Length: 131
Length: 131
Figure 1 (spheres, rainbow over the protein chains, first blue to last red):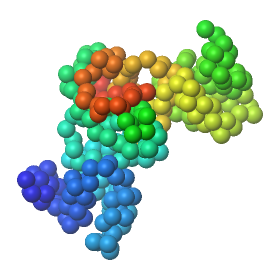
Figure 2: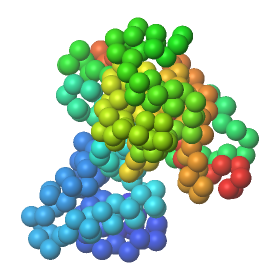
Figure 3: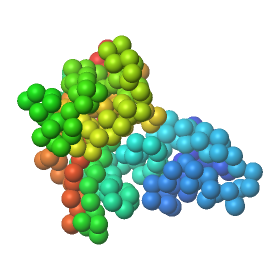
């Protein structure tokens, strides 16, 4: 689906900024921060403000079109891949890798009556290069 | 094991502040922030500084005696229970609940050669009361 159509079907008005931000996250799978997205799009949209990027992130999160990765204590990263997968952070080089994990079939004893909207799995350790 | 012994066996000098902070986390399983721990201990230790609490948290984290919960974008919470378990956050009332999850046996396709030191599982949704 084209980005404009995807946004519209989720009741998001497809402004230029929203489309550019969403497409950036789809094309850049390195889990950028909002600041990285802002700096990367500034040459294309010279009138872009940080606030506008942050507001766009909040809106896309609210519509579950992207997910926030809070594996790091001090910064939030974003991911347009909202399928079930885990994030592995190498504590040496800092890179964040995706990995498949069967989260929906994970055995857990969540109390009766609780409903789950989002699942996040974070691993920390050493990648093959840094080990 | 007594707290002083536990700290010593992990090469942490058992100062009063370190013991009080660790014991607070063991006794208060509501996943407090460093700020909550600081405010709670201030009447017992009037000379306590925020920096001292933050430094203690960093040290205890480094020694894997506690874990950091980064389920919330804007704040870090702490947990003295370092066994495999998940954290569920109710997006309505904000409470964080522990739940058992068999993380070590979760099927995942982590790349060859990667080693895992920490596993964190976060769910977000509605608790039984708020549903």
